[in-house]
Length: 271
Length: 310
Ligand SMILES: Nc1ncnc2c1ncn2[C@@H]1O[C@H](COP(=O)(O)OP(=O)(O)OP(=O)(O)O)[C@@H](O)[C@H]1O
Ligand SMILES: [Mg+2]
Image (cartoon, rainbow over all chains, first blue to last red; front, top):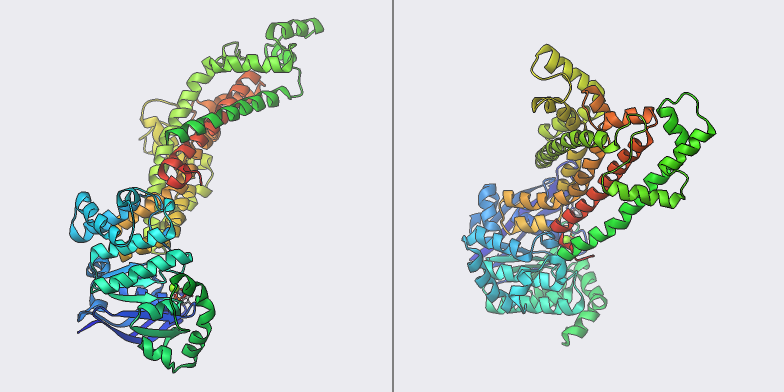
């Protein structure tokens, strides 16, 4: 069964009529990892937010989005809200800004878990202790009682992953989860995604500049340029035999970008 | 947190000292010799050298400047601001009641201003660029643009004279607060609600709002987070509003014949009653320093990043 099916998604700016994402279609199977790659401004974030119907009000979208055969594009805002978090989780690029800076970390987490499961603070805490262990966050108690600025970007990133694990969504959407991190934290976060892939049956949409990482964790790749999908298919196939000039260009230039990453991974990521 | 408050209070002490010194110096720099001012104020017919000597001796004007300052400061700390040159009464016996009258007006107005600024700010931000937003902005801007004395006069004419609902002037029971508070509040709400509105709109584009929505939090929870962060911007502004109003009631007090600091200071300035002017300037300056400190402490309470000192 297809888990997610996006058909003819189009996103444009209301005032100017400027089209940001053109006629985009793709599918995602249960447990699969789809990577979206492309240069800055190619519409990766807008596409991923369109799936959750979370783009800014000045953007409008048409097209069909089915999650387990349920038409998300037809849901009322209220029903859509229930899907967010519970079925579709998002992990943002910059952990440092993802949490309300004036509240303890636990506030967002407890509120989210309470909204979806009706859990008390105690129940939420128990659940979070378990998942935080999984993403290698030591001293969960202590971390929950910190403010965002007291934690590192990598820790906050893993905190978002932990919350996603507690929510057990159908799909995790990670918008460049490693870009804002130093190399060591990048490595840890990528490891977490690899673990999730191995341990859970959760599909992932992974947006990244980093083709080395993409090759490591994705099954399928979607290459975007100027709001259009120029190529999509299996990771191996695309890396071995890129069809579109733009994809060839990306693969040719990735060596330079990924050198630092390879070093830390300590493995042979073929170039 | 306790340590932060202690530190902040300790920093305030030298500031208060500096402010008091400045107040003293500025008044002493006035071109006339103080003894002469005193004698003129007391309407002594012929002012002789001898008389000036005597007055200098009596009031300590011939002592070194710094000694005079410390004498004055220590007396001020005991609320003894000296004798009024004109009224021949202790300054505090004039200043005390006037201060309380203005203070009451200020505090009530501030509450009204804060409540309505937040209300209108949130309302406009949540309805950005709709009719509600435009209408409120136009209306409140209009009230800010209109001079207070004119608005006051119109209100007195309509509500006190024509409709006979409220007292025209003076300070006589709760009802007499309504018009002056309204006029003061209308002047400031239009300025302050914009801060709340724009802070809320800025926060709307923050990542944590996107993440909150992406986590499926209901809109009312998200609005509370936005408000919490927006109020931080407003805290300093609101805290500073209180001394600004305290020192700026001159016009309103005149229109509504309010027996407060504004009226007192104007008559003191006109009759060169230096001890009264000195006390007035000191009180307003101290109010600025104290409320500035309070705003820092409140900000630290709401904003953990300030508390941690980065
Ligand atoms: N709210 C918006 N209003 C108008 N234009 C927007 C809006 N959001 C994004 N855009 C535009 O849409 C285009 C695609 O943006 P998007 O953020 O999806 O790019 P991206 O592929 O995620 O890039 P990056 O790698 O830098 O994150 C950009 O040209 C951007 O300026
Ligand atoms: Mg992006």
